[in-house]
Image (cartoon, rainbow, N blue to C red; front, top):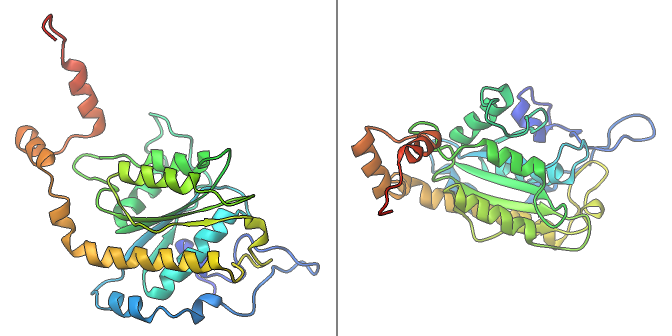
Length: 272
């Protein structure tokens, strides 16, 4: 595939970041792209009925160059791109640790803008010490539940996967499912867990044939299908009584900081 100049299209570059260096100094490249041969005609036809491409943000949970969660995220991105989606992969390198003073940092603003831009998201994290990595959680923590009247994740459709260094586990996808619901996202039923990730990628960083690879295709296909089915009704689904009341009383939706400040103003009485 041709090299793209768009930094969000790195998953279409060949060789890709994370490909192994060969003895001659070149990067490994697979001769064939397995994604191009997938039977995705039904979901692609459904997607093509839209006037615009479905916008999907992809997050991964490691800073390593040959990170298997990154390679898995790239494979998911290729599948989504093959279906017809507009995909952007966020690079967490340089994102500061979550605090209360760096919300204007360029990497923080980039992440938040991408979340608002997206209609669906795909998260992929390694499992470390039985759960998601700090890199993955840090990205999610930097995305607020609300920024003024904007909800950066509310109503987005979420699919996810995990990679394991050892035997198969589902701790990480279970945590991602909880986090997605907490972020007011619609979480799809399917999920993908890849055991022994170091055995499942070619030197070029592409997934080897397996039932686990097929499962990743299932997750991506379902993410698009659910997005296309629910998407047209998102305004209705996001119309919440509590938020209508907040707008009526306050004139707009408050930020989380403003809500916390309001709570601090409440002085307990003897009858409380």
